[in-house]
Image (cartoon, rainbow, N blue to C red; front, side):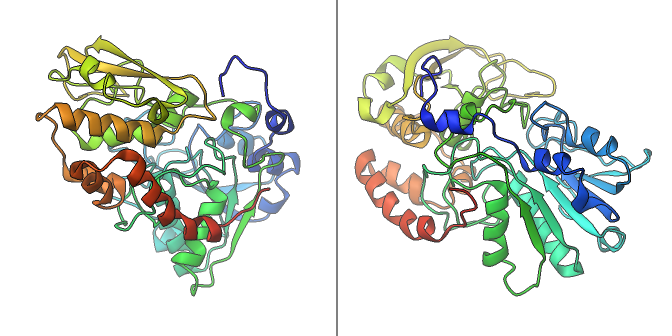
Length: 396
């Protein structure tokens, strides 16, 4: 949808969306009273008014917060991707990082917990590591008999459109489950999927407090909720939307916009010839997005990109500007871009991380075979049919 257009009926219906956190706060956190609580969250998990979850809990009388766990980027959401974040034990409540050397709560910690609460702002793409952290916590809670409560949020990318094949190789933090890249599920629905797929025989007690007034056909800009960056390089909704495709640049010798003010909205390299690439793209592959040649120089940005690829090197590149959020298919556009770059540049290199992000070798093999993008997309849609029919749906 063009951001300058008036809201659709679906947007008008969803404009008063309330998250699971809003619902819990409105009810005085009744389900949390009398329990020793652990919370997996960060400061991007906010109420409709922009209040972080930990501030909301601190103002609620009678709650017993025993432990705070944080995912990648830390509790304050100030660490760049992959950066180690240490735990803090010097405050009234320990804050324990579950990204890096530790991935799940310990048995001793869970022994002092009656309820494990999760509130994380997932972005709707399989690469995002928050769901992998939740999965590890679900496994630990299942092993130690600790019930879980997910405070759900809308999927910012909506719940209708799926992109990418279902992963065939999974188990890494950036691809932890057999789901498409753009998976169409809320975090609560992902938790249900994990429960039935990986933890069916464990007896895990899992409750989901759903968001209110969210419909699957609504994107984030229709929800009336504040965008609080869930990680340092997703400062706005359009960055997160295009991340579905442009994250794949991380598996190539291309800069993906890190080290600039537009992460995941551009790509570039010293050897790239953008005009040649753009002339080779077909309009249907670029629906909803404007592509134009640019030149830029990635710089070190503390807390966002200390060592961006091609740091301090001039890069001819391509800028991607979203013009219609409903129509854009980021993976299709990026797929076509990579295929065109490959046709025109022998300098293009693939790292093993590309297949990790893609959920297996299939996408790379399709591009390297020279098969038309449209033909590959048709085959990929067939792969999603079974998943789409079986995936959990908590919303209309």
